[in-house]
Image 1 (cartoon, rainbow, N blue to C red):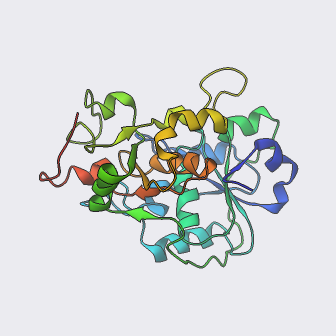
Image 2 (image 1 turned 90 degrees about the vertical axis):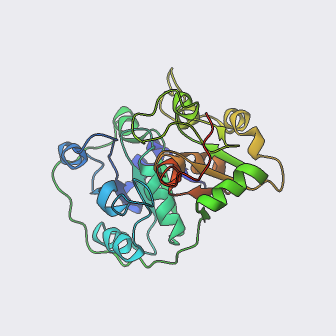
Length: 273
């Protein structure tokens, strides 16, 4: 067992899983429409903005959601304590990883991310269902603390004394562009492993996770025994994808949930470019 499930495995044993469709992309609001146009049979739609995050504010653009509200959303989507869960999106897991992390953090014992997402589900001939989905109400209960999380001070300590991974694109890390947040740059001492590097870029397996050996090459600084590791991004969403990649390598990384969008709300925090 690991954090991933192949589309072939899900296709061949679909009835075993509760499936969540987390289709979301920055700047788009049509995830529900995409879901209703076609989804994995039985998959309930999860709205990242309202189910997997609190409203934006001093804690960043996508703060961790209130526990009670998150639990209610998961129950509404049919999630139970005793049934394994698969999450997917149409951006190779970069949105669905947030749901994977939150369920793990809140104590769900078996959550997998669909490797390759919706496009690979279609590629392997997985069945498609249309319309809205209203599954039976689940009995998921929260036991927060299953995955480590750090605040801004903790992220600064990781950057100084351990490894703090910045999951954003290289040009944002270097401060050359900043299309979303008001300040460009990165947390001093952070190292850049863009989320896109977790995935095969081209060829027959494009959009799937790279092999463990290939991932180890990018995350080698985080693999030293005893090293404390954390990850952040712009708002704490895609950083969960790096946390998942690190779990594939046997490393339990903390998530800096507020990420860059929280870091820059305090002008006293240093910035590197």
